[in-house]
Length: 163
Figure (cartoon, one colour):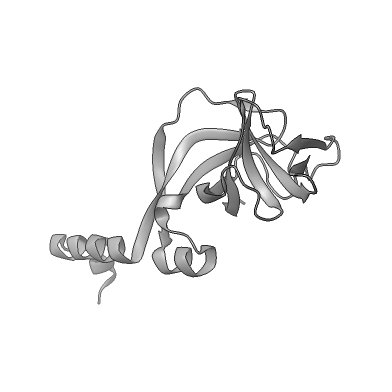
């Protein structure tokens, strides 16, 4: 095979590659939304701006999820550093919404803002909300009566970043 053949594949070949990839890979939507790792980012509009491809087998075996359970958003702010940095892309599993099945990093909606924070289950349907950056104070939330504008949006299951 010549280098030119790799740079300019034939039309039929491209069609076959796309079909193959759609069966092997799932396109997970990337929303133009930023979850603040800080004091909160207001969500004004949720628009899909792109998609990232993940192997379906990886989604099933590693995340025990289906592609429809997942979406991608950006991180904004420094409260979760060094774990998450501004501009990181996070993969969120929406199945964990309104429940904290285990400790981990979650996306929350609080007072109209999206936050990404570490949640720790506490007795009495309480969660401790902490930031990985020690400059930010932890606080507790009750899951019994969360209020009108408090929701756990989903659990962060993967992150990607530019080096």
